[in-house]
Length: 507
Image 1 (cartoon, rainbow, N blue to C red):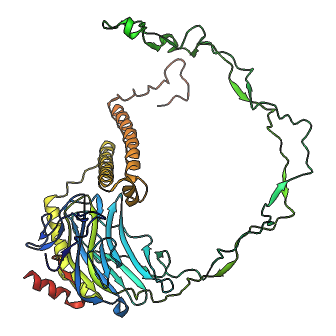
Image 2 (image 1 turned 135 degrees about the vertical axis):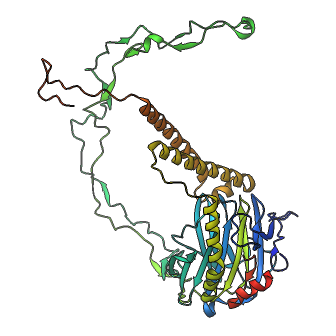
Image 3 (image 1 turned 180 degrees about the horizontal axis):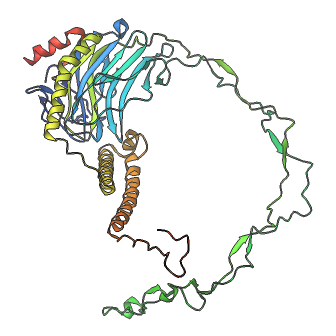
């Protein structure tokens, strides 16, 4: 693996301990190996932080011909919670690779609660000198099966971008328009030094000072009154208490009145109340008082002194700039994977970093496509498709039940593992929606209970005998006349040499 790939030895803050304790290896694929003997870069540890990087042969300047990033991802053990995205690290890269290492582009799949394909670029504000992260809106959803999938990002010199999965375009757009926050700030902003005048009136309406309370307005009338029309139900037992002593209760043999106090049988629901309309003293229910009006207040009228809604004056944005060549991003020195994952077996292969679209397409056609097709054939041979049969309602309920329970279990386990290793705050932050796994679990349990009830009702319905066929009553005396019934774990670091470099190193 060395010297091309370098594991991060970054330490935890104020501790002499590796921050990234996840293991890496360059080894042959085990699950659905599409190419015999093909080696790839593999994540080996579960529930660990991983970081590894490889320098390019020479820095890549996006300003020249744009950027092309393409690599394969294979989830040998599936993926319930973890990342598989790559970072193109900003030149010059110094020190140990970590989450604080500046990057130019971050691209690739991620899943924890939801699946998402990240595409983030960092842009230098020429006025402030600070970098800002810009995130792709409405990102594509990546596949999560165990096949090898190819992720491709192309950034053109016209600020365009194209994202493809397995050679199929999934998202196209502009670096200027499809990212949040937008690159170019507003020309004008609210003046932070402006304040609303003390005498500014922004109340659109005011109470009518000339209005008086009507003489018949009773502010003391209660909102609810006794319903004089109500009558006690016939089966109401006023002389029966709701709770009675349990007649079957027996004083325990080891009960000590001196230590335990006087024994009394426990109270149980009065059985006589089971079929009654109620027990105990009956009281008339309350109803809304038709005469209730509540406290009187004068009606509102238009305010003659109203000046409108106040807003601070607008001034020129001191940090304003306009960059119409956003594709001229910072130079790229290396590629790195800095990940947290609950599952091992994430595999990276046939990585290409350059600016030649034709080279990436050639790798896809000659390297990825044959591998992927072989994997599909192996999967179908291993799991032949069953003969299609008509599914009953019960089959559908059971199948949906199984899928839902599996999803909920995985979500709960992932959130627990992340919270255990990262802390609850970090777990909530990384799950994007504040303890989403717990919410999913609760929702899943409610769903499960509902489906169990539905399943029982369905089974009971199947077991119930069919109702007897109706008998024609036309002959009855009283009948009605109407009765009817890789990289091979190698970085193809620069330009068109990617394929040759992989072949040479593999040999």
